[in-house]
Amino acid sequence: MSALLKEIKQRDPHHTHFHQAAESLLNSVSGYLDQHPELRTQGLLARLLEPERVIRFRVPWVDDQGEVRVNRAYRVQMNGALGPYKGGLRFHPSVNLDVLSFLALEQTIKNALTGLPLGAGKGGADFDPKGRSDAEIMRFCQALMAEFHHHMGPDIDVPAGDMGVGMREVGYLFGMYRKLSRSFGGAFTGKSLDFGGSVLRPEATGYGLIYFLQSMLTHQNESLSDKTVAVSGAGNVARHAAAKAIEEGATVVTLSDSRGTVHAPEGLDDAHLDAVARIKADGGGLDRLAEEFDGIEHYQGERPWRFDCQVALPCATENELEEDDARRLVDNGCRWLAEGANMPCTAAAVAVFKDSDMLYAPGKAANAGGVAVSGLEMSQNSRRESWSAGEVDRRLRDIMERIHRRCLEHGGDDARPDYLTGASVAGFQRVARAMLGQGII
Ligand code: GLU
Image (cartoon, rainbow, N blue to C red; front, side):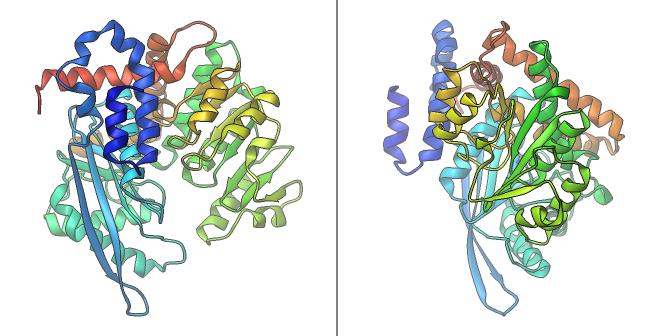
């Protein structure tokens, strides 16, 4: 273990998610650093792994029963060398400084990989939106903004959505920001099309994931149209990835939520995906999908990884795919895995893929489409323009193809590229140069 990693582990012994992300990054760039010793100077790695700033604050709000509730919110302003801090806000009971720090580190490399002028940040609160009324969600968002508006702005920090924060929440957050800052700047992305949002932003992470997967397949003279695909999750990323894969002719056989997995051996279609969106918006579980449609089975407490597939797309949450799941996928003949969620595969699962014939694409490359279209939303806002769906889709495809090429540059362009090394080195290289050029700050 490197001395730096040891120091990080000693300093914050409970930050296990952050250790996992940092260890993966340091291992992936170590070969490159050996060839470029100049990057081991100026405390570059130590600075990269320490947030520029962390803001922690309380969010007091009043629930529908008149009770005062207090949540804890954070913003990790990780790295501003390439542009304003950029990354989502997550509302989930599991939110803490460890989870947000790992997400912010992933975001640093991901945002650099897009090639756009985006720094990196991540934030959120340990607030559980499940079962909360619309009025409660609005009051919570407004209370959060009462503090956070001091720390953000179009050239400072530009938040967006993440788990538990969709277009409705971004609307309430943006509205309060606008009122308190008295300015209609492009200080949020993921806004509604009614007030400055970009077309295709909701679809962007899922569509981008499929565009990246198509680049992987094309590189091997393969095509998506004859593949069976297992998707986990039932949220924004999973549903749009599934929709795009279906549009491209693939057979998508699973989706999942915290309660279980639905399996459709003949494949899901758009009507199923519309039903999933409706059921989830109602707060229901995927068991209802199996009740509503023939040909779909629900497996309580199961993950999608036991079902036969050639392509696996984990789109739910961190560490959802463990070593046993990885073995089962490999044994069942799965050959491509691309991460729609952030760090959904444990380190042990990634090690299994490395020892197999499977091609593994990490989220920092494969799911960068979301933040990439956020970057396009920022451009549209500052130019006072709205681009067409065709224009945004073309740019998204270009960006994903370019990220794929960058991965090959540093991960090998033979039949079996190492996408983890490629993505980590390509992203790291861009941030490192910007940091070195700006001195020790
Ligand atoms: N939360 C998304 C991510 O993990 C998007 C962030 C953004 O659009 O700023 O990349």
